[in-house]
Image 1 (cartoon, rainbow, N blue to C red):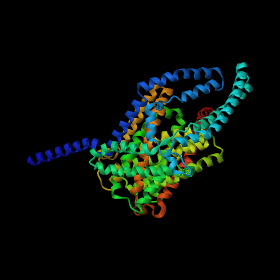
Image 2 (cartoon, one colour):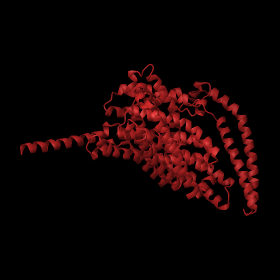
Image 3 (cartoon, helix red, strand yellow):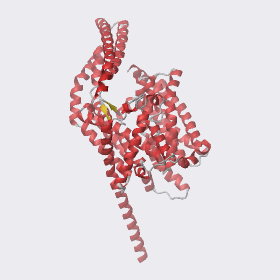
Length: 589
């Protein structure tokens, strides 16, 4: 009896200890600190751009414009001059244009584009800005004259169509063509105006303050997690410096043209340092890859808005959600059964990276299956190399095949890994392709959390059991990347905010406020830190076994080839056969 009592007491103590450890996870694990920091930023962004005050201001500005849009849409069978003017003003209603938005814009600024002089990416003096404005004035004046002429022609064509009560098809067609030409001149004049309104900037003053502020913010989590705050701060500033250098190189004109992004430079520079002069010891406490990118992924959740997912319809959802898991599973099976990959963890991380959405999915999947740091680095490195190639080749192939912008954009969005690369690649085809590609990719991004959860379940119930470990339901929760909860909560919260505000106001305060005003820019910085930290902590000798026999590259190429075929097939079926009305609607705008 005494032994039973002691055993029972011991079991109770174990339960209590486990409960205490679970509770302490909330302030000791970086997954939770990614959520706390991410939501602190989101709350600030909400207060500045989406709370009742900014919403009321946006509503006041938008109400008369929406009335004009509705009236004009009913009045004529085409988009009139008044409709375009009202729509342009509607798009210009952005809560990020307030004082808070201007403040964040100044401190979140990255090195500007440059061609021959890297100093120009950081500093543009008053005199240089004035000289650029003076040089652009003549071009702007010319653009304004062309715009005025095009507007006059469009007005005459529209008046002729209106005089016939819009019953003459030929007059309507002529008016539409004249208005389209006028809109083309509007865009040219806008670009000339931007060039003529160039403003001075000095990143040498803003970047150090931004680094200090962000370093202190992340130091709060470092303190509670038991890290040395001074050592973390010093390492963080080193990571920040290398990340800025990577952004500088990524924004060089020719680098941008060939798709050699800041992310690729961040990993490349980091690897160069790590495998030549070696990463200094003082820098290593700042190499917190998951801390940075998990926080960035929580912020990404605010960009996944339900209204945007539904806007592209069932077609886009099918392309993203049916193809992606199919490609992931088939690629994983191919890696195990055909290639006989030595590491199942490397196999699933590459499969998720390639099929879902690149780096973000790789990070979440690696956490779910407890992959090694080297395995994650291999997957990300391969992904970045092929992404840079595909973002250039895919638009060329789509044009050669003669595909329309909707089909081409959906194909790009479902195949290319990085969200930024998807947008840039879609832009090569046109604005419709860019929108469709970005939306399909956004729908695909939702699968990050589901993929991580599915991998965690699979690994605990099958892979670990295969190695003799008992099935433990709590292990699934332990493996599940907790930051994904923050990702979903952010998505739900801001989808609700946008939905309650209505389409136009929601766009003004969430997309053109919260996201573009603060969270999107900060997320870009956090991803840059993560890529830099990956490079600085990577030893080529540790990676060599994973590239042995070229299996990792073969896996990615084979899986991506299957992805290319299946995504195109699904996009064609959805947008051309099942829902052609969606394609027609998107192409008409």
